[in-house]
Image (cartoon, rainbow, N blue to C red):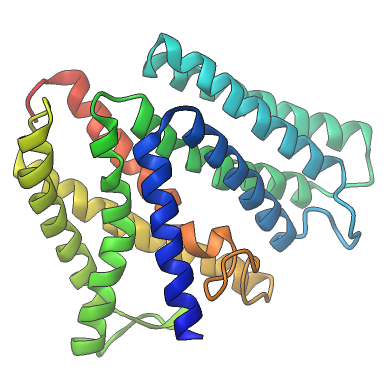
Length: 285
């Protein structure tokens, strides 16, 4: 199992490197496909389709709106990241209305909790993942900045694991993840802050036209790490609620898309928001 997990993890990192360094249409297509899979995994876990094996109208509407969402996002980005953010809001509202149409005109086929779960899955998967695209394509020097999302998630997770193994004594969330400790969480947050400082100093401020202050980088790393941990635990909570072990079997040794990207999904919007706000108000952070 360890060898399988290691090899698939290495392959995943290689694919991420190629896709994120290339960016553009390749990144958009890959994120769209990943979002579709994430949406299917989440709707399956949350029982949106009920007991039926075939996906119902709610699942189909979510898949169609995911396609519309990425199409509109890509087109709006030509007018700037602000236009993309406005387009995002409009498509999210349109998706909500589409789910309501299904609920009303198919009544009483679907219950209210299924409709709310369908919207939750749309926001949690496709929408949150799209911030990787905005971070890479919507901000100058995005090819460098997008890696902050992975430092905040995978980087902090590695630091938390190392500190937890060495010093972990107090359980952080025993009902969700018995192996996670408070000491590990502190190590993850501190480790992410340090990784952000190092990456900012040696890469961002050395090879780009952007100047980020090291205190800002440390704060962004700490917040991003903290949020990524919550994302990891939230994904675990969904699995515990519905009594499943993994979201899928797409990635050998890791599970599904949501099992591997649960922390990246929530870290990306935080990193994007922090950098976007700073760049809006100042050329120097």
